[in-house]
Image 1 (cartoon, helix red, strand yellow):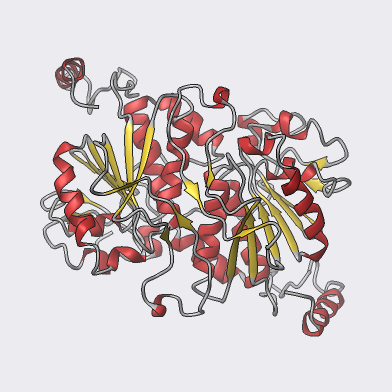
Image 2 (spheres, each protein chain N blue to C red):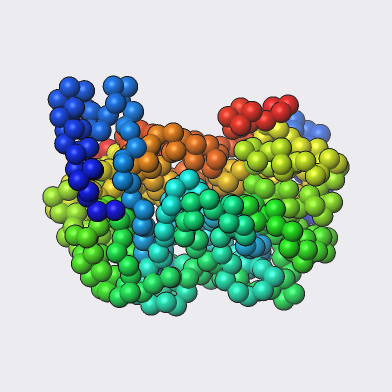
Length: 256
Length: 256
């Protein structure tokens, strides 16, 4: 999606209405957002060694169901076209020598990736790899052409390395909080949040929180009814409140 | 895992204790099950065209985290070694002509599949395919050698075609209830259940319910502490009660 005249008009009307309806960005009188007239259509998700499975497939489950209700395209992006494994890079990260690592196939390399409306960056142990320079360069380069950047879990710690989160509010995995925020002092880390929206960057808390962030994104741009029906089809109890975050307490996040 | 003398002894003691502790299958006095002394180690999951993403990757997320705490092996099984796509077989199942279909790589064909402790059968639109005879034959043939069979979502409708669920209690996806149970009149379908255990067959309700069923399975055979910590690492609010099922009402399941 690129901003069209129609969407610009809607935004203008919404801005106008916001003086009439309290808190009313694109809000109808009952505060339920209306679907965007020109919602995102093209999604890319980054894959890298030792990504976290549910960070990828929680959001993709919700979006796959959305794709049965509107036309969507998904690209799976990685540095090469080789299947991407969830196997950790370091044996120390697999202390019981398990063999439990699905592999997923990219559709495009970072060099051949088509233009995207939305880029999703998952988390996982792989975000700690020192070998992700091409991936970081891609995120930084592609960001100005995106409509939205979504990070799941420690995907925000990866994106923070590009500087794109500097000066922004963001959140990340609560179990891995201290390590994730340590090298990104210029980000306004929100310690109690299921997800955070700052401008066109959405960051979610850990793992399952990616499902709630994605449903909130669907609600915002495709309508609440779509999001609610998708949650019901997933038999998932959707957490609609971005401030709901019991895991800030479970993991004793400083400042929560 | 095969039943060892040690495990048989434990079962005998547990059966003995069950007369002393109400409802006490392998229960300690506070009703918290103890971890099995010889829990399952080798898992296989079936992949077929148009499987439901989260049916596979919800359980595998929980088990992947378990695999960092004990030695586990995962095999991904399909009729051939070709990457398995989530794309529906029929264009009518993709009414907006979306292109939103990840592909996953099997590790073994059904012919070369190693012996398993646990077989997981996911659901999805693909379970309605008339071309799954080899898969059905595999399930039927391998079942006697398994310690456990787990189905997620409409995976139970697929397994029901083999006759293995006849005379057993089972559940399935609540949004697809009527279609799923229609051709399996000899199964005792439970209309309100997040998951159902009958003997060594566990059946879950739709999609996300697979996460709760898997966590319950982990609790039963690896201990409650492992299951609880894994749920917390996933930042997932674990539903521990198998009878908790708001989606039986959402989808107006007959008899619920």
